[in-house]
Image (tube, rainbow, N blue to C red):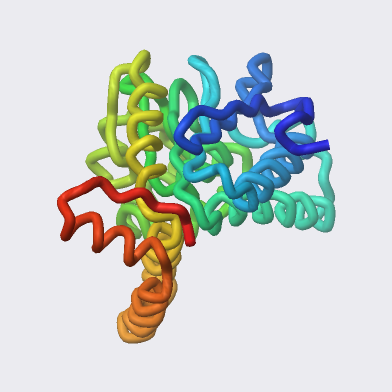
Amino acid sequence: MSYRDKEYKTMLLSFEDPGIAIVQFNRPKAFNAVNDTFLDEIWEITVALEEDPEVRCLIYTGNTQAFAAGADLKAVVNFNAFEARNYLDKVHRAIFAVEDNQKPVITAVNGLALGGGLEIVLASDIRIVADNATLGLPEISLGIFPGAGATQRMPRNTSICLAKQYIFTGDFFDANTALNMGLINMVVPADEVMDQAKKMARKLSRKGPLALRAAKQSVNNSMNMDIKSGCRFEQTSWSMLFSSEDQKEGMGAFLESRKAEFKGK
């Protein structure tokens, strides 16, 4: 059975032209809280979408009340240390599948994006957030701290002092605060979040897939490499694109004053 035809317990999967996949978290009664099934399904779907040649861009979203409200505490409260570590293995597998996906990933956020929900947002490429959304990393109030990468990604997205402030206090913050911190791309009215996400996805889906993949990897590497190593990686990736049909099409279309039609080859 194709992943497209499978019925998932915690996800709804749909597709729109041109090459847009929409993954909607679907645990509304639990505010889309993250449990084992959620982690397995988001990983399975994300990997399948990366391998699907018809998909050019991914959108992850929740519902009007919540993008995702973090870990399902009932599922984790009685963990011992080894069970907690194994749980985070699944968490990181899912988060890195989103972050490292060769295709652009957009998060369309309404309602609550807390804990692991916000950490999924931090792993995405383009972040579009409703003006009435609430974000935060409240784990410190539970006697733990964020364990799905926020201690690493938050300082890389904002500043180390702001990361410490919100991780240490667990305070919630609104969309405009997140925008001013550089944590998200745009704030829009709640009823326009998906429209804006799809508009962005259509724009990205018409770009060259090979160039997008290389650009995403180069930018992601900049967070972990020294500048010279990063520039050498960029140089190699940029040069390799000159062996592609997309590069010939893109430059040819520009010189001929026509619209490029990229094929990912």
